[in-house]
Image: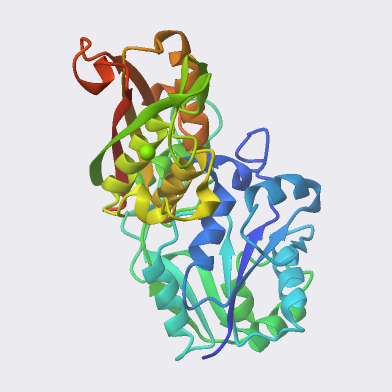
Length: 392
Ligand code: MG
């Protein structure tokens, strides 16, 4: 199979956006825009590697945005976007990939099908770009935009037939686009397809999706968040239940918080019933087995383990599915210790482990009116419900 590298152009300073940092480093539904863009290409089977072109002044933001993604060293961009792309292509010259996909960091909603289609078009053409046909009627104005509510006067209607709006990725056979960019150095062309056109390369139009818009304004960022949110339409509910018995000791661990008590809870790990019930609830929402199947009690490595590890694992499974935990609710069932004084700390700890807002995390407590094993003070039970949203 031929090699295909995705070159993500993230060197802009985003002055038009007016935020405190370049827009590619802003948060979009819990992740930096750039990270979402990089991950879209990294997980695509047709892409062999991802390389990012950055402004070195924002190296710290870049490192934070792509932490853990195991990317090669980023390329330093140039004065213009065209210079940045050329630097990126030059950096790839030694590895000489067969193909390169050049993509704007600020288009985080790129979908697999469009990437597929651009790669496939390169079997037939030396260059191809994602684009959408112009649907709106086009008007030419007289330029009277200054002041007042009007945008000026119409001087004519532009024939839109055959017009497309260019997006990215723009894909190229590598040697051809490298040569084209070298010969276009110093010119100001609007995109890489224009560089290819100037070199006489036929460029194919690949119909893409409106959702692959470029995040240019704060409104675009809100719109992108809405698109991502509405994509999580598969809403799941899972429940979990757990019990541990008391043994000799001086404290229990409940929902990740150490609570002084006349006994400890007996168990293989730290016996945190709250975290165990919640871990099972999340696994249940994913139909992913139970805590025992992921962390067998027979395995000595979990002896005395901090149960936050189990809960974090369950949360990571949700993230790996492209989902989000919308809400969790834990009920602790015992006569003693009293949970009330520790409730706020428990809520905060769960929110921290799960990376959720505390207003989506509930911890409750009840007794069983001195009935049953919890009523007799033989142990503590906990139940939990988790609501998980997955891509529909
Ligand atoms: Mg347990």
